[in-house]
Length: 343
Image 1 (tube, helix red, strand yellow):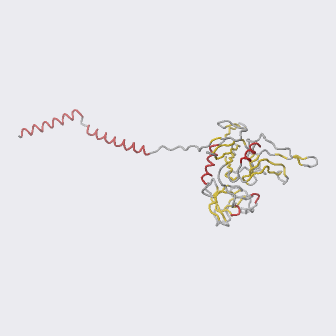
Image 2: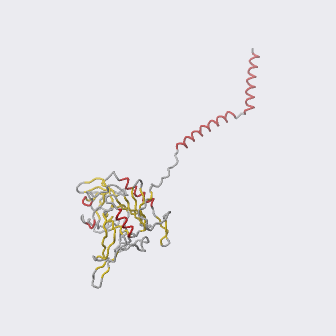
């Protein structure tokens, strides 16, 4: 029996020896490493699956349904003025429209109302006619960031589009559309019954490229016209067309302008839509002529000016070819139209 046991042990050792010679002494470690790598690879794959690729933001949708087709610039909507390349910033304008769309339905949207200081001239800012930001006192409302400190405020100009957040008889808390700013404004400067009833039409003005685009909400937002324009310059009797969001307040078949430094009516501009203080979107201005006897004569409406779309030249308004101003004048809808000025 003892000899039999020795034979069995010898046979077992022989089998192990043969296995090692065939497979190799490192096989067990190799198998273990292979399993570990497999586990690591599987876990790595799971992690990779959980990390999503960043989603690239797509431009907001808009189309073209042109209702005014004079002076068109062809796709890709770039052109050159005095050696400088310019373009129509349709995408940027569409993004600005989206800002107002988010506020629609949440709040009552209206505007600062103080045309020709008709609701009371705003107080002076620390004895001056402009606030610390350079905003002018005339045709504006005082806006207080802290209602407990009435010595510190800014001027919000007539026509500025605002969200009504809270209101009472004395002060109305408003948010300035396109910003995170909130102010308390004396309620006399906030219209009670003139609100943005729905955003249907937008007039977008580009100060940098000196052009203008109109959008209308149909199935989607569509460009209904685009053209050159001229905005305001800085000067003794001139002001830059202000940036921001404005209510399209009213329209007039013509508005009259005075000779610089006087109260004398010098002429008129046709097909005018007012959006802030005395600033209008209008056609080419017409200067009156006078006879030797002093009789005033109207030479008639002009369509074209070679300065349109070149450099800022106006007093504050946005000049257009008269045919485009007429289109906007007829197309405009009160309570459904805003003006956005970008650069």
